[in-house]
Amino acid sequence: MWFKNTFVYQIRDSAFSDRLPDEPDLEASAFHDCLPTQPVSMGLVAPHPEISTRQLTTREFIVWQIQRQERLLPGPVVKETLQERVDTMQQSEDRKVGRNERTDLKEAITLELLPRAFTRNQRHTVILDRLSGWLFVQCGSESRADDVTAFLRDALGELPVVPLGSLCQPDAVWSQWLSSGDLPADTEIQDEMALYHPAEDAIVKVKQLPWDSAEVQQLLANGYRPTQIMLSWQDQLSLQINEKSVFKRLRFSDDLMEQAAQEGGDSALAEWEASLHLMTAALRRFSDQYLQWCGTDRSGEPNPEKS
Image 1 (cartoon, one colour):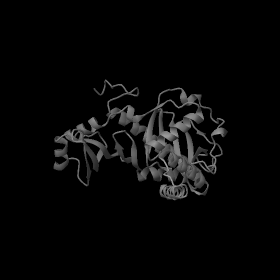
Image 2 (tube, rainbow, N blue to C red):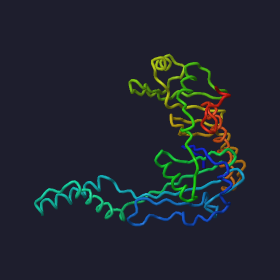
Image 3 (cartoon, helix red, strand yellow):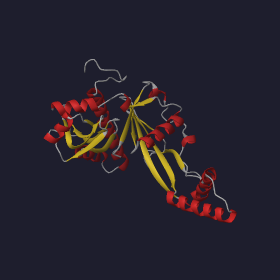
Image 4 (cartoon, rainbow, N blue to C red):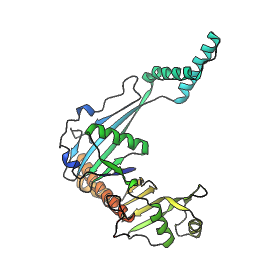
């Protein structure tokens, strides 16, 4: 249940979650296996095996789980088969196969081989936090997060969100932290970061060097700016954040996990629900704090209290 990578979005319509029914008719968006010649299939499944509906609605949040099935057709197999077909055509017909014809052949070969391809299933949990208006999407890449939000928008009819990265430009904030040493309370920067020099278009990846070391401080003095940092916050979570404000390599504290296990008792569903509550609360608090660090309010405008 505990997210490892999270794309964070802000709901731009405060009434959006209230418009969603507790048990909407989502049959049309239910997951189905890929058809023989279908490269990808996406659909809603129950958020937990012991839940019968495709949407979990509570006072605090709404949860969906999206299953994505993809047919795995290795590129080298298609390339090898294509070359064999081209060689055969050129020899039998004594002519050169043109670019457009090769493209058509490749598409035909892909459709021919897809029914024999293996399939891979992935699941992405999406949490709409009704208390704060954050949307947390469990994904490992930006393109996959775009696919998930696009699917959910189609399934629900609307999804008025903007990514956290459009509200927050963190590199200037991080630079100030690192240069001044004035870190926020209960926040620690770990010994791993990426620094970028815009004029030289150069990236330096720093590992096992403290942020206040002479080497890191010299890079900052030479014009390098942090584009990715690792930090721990309030002994609740640690994570990697990049310049697009994507949360990766999330690790929640052992105390939170133990609390979820204790609250769940012998019930797998109860432990899952407790984990969901505790994780969402931690992500909510951190996302709120992160926006404050960036000096913007929820509209993306500068926060006068921070200026």
